[in-house]
Amino acid sequence: MNVIQIKNPGPMMTVQDLGRPGMLHAGVSRCGPMDTPSFRLANALVGNAEECSAIEFAMFGGTFVASSPVRIAVTGGMVDVKIDGMTVSPWESHWLQPQSQLTIGAMKGAVWGYLAISGGLNVPETLGSRSTHIRTGLGGLDGRCLQKDDIIELGEAIAAPLMVQSHPRIFNGDVIRVVPGPQADYFDDEAWQIFLGQPFTISAKRDRMAQSLEGPQLKAARGHDIVSDGTVFGSMQVPGSGQPLVLMAERQTTGGYPKIATVATVDLPKFAQTPTGASVRFVSISAEEAEDLLIADRQAIKASLAALAKKPDPAG
Image 1 (cartoon, helix red, strand yellow):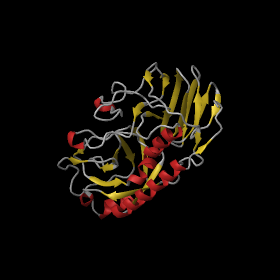
Image 2: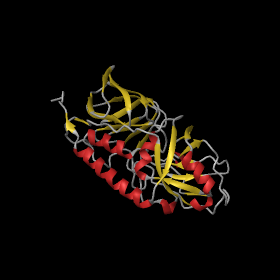
Image 3: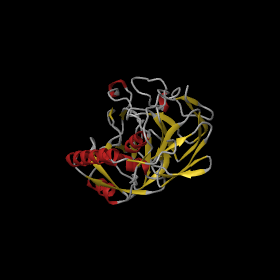
Image 4: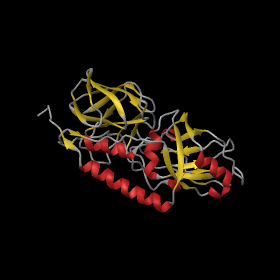
């Protein structure tokens, strides 16, 4: 049996796959990675199918040991990666030999990192997915964050060359595009001028469920309580404090605060990867513009996956 052992886990380290769609009616959010394109690239670099599960972590990655030769790749941002003390590059695949130690350091200019291992992580499926939903204890490894000395069985890997992504996904700028939310009319012109005209800071109050913002208060002229209704990844709620709260991959499926806007899907990875303490500005676009941008981005990601280049394979 091929396994990977977690010798020292990073924060909020979980097993994730592309999530469990179609369960919102049952109160189960899709979950999945915070930065889906980086997740998909990690799997592609090690020759995995896109539905394979991988490890997501926040801020830094920790240390790992495999029981047999495996291909590994780390994506999400720029980060120090070492195998037995020797530096190797993120955004490309490498061989990790038995008992060699993989060390993943701190993320630079990003928050969420991904470690893909050839064969994927063979944890049980729950409701059709291996994704971990921490707050409900669902999926992954016993529904929890990975811990020191956890051992995870690996799936069967297919033969594949080592690969490199020549142009890693690095996010620049502070602009996040949003679409007016279902309760946009709860906020008057003054509130909208503040929302779109002033910067907000990424708060340290962040996890897989939600991301708090700090900045000018947004007052809902029609009140900060609504009949609870559905939410999506990127819904921007404004509670009574006036400080926006953006719902993320592991969000609750309904909420009782008015939603001024929704982060455009194309900008969700950028928003999720914005470091704590950084400032962001919001620009309003139409739903049609958001759809066009998403289609173009998905085509660009598809092209990036197709453009992965082979690298010399020291294992022969």
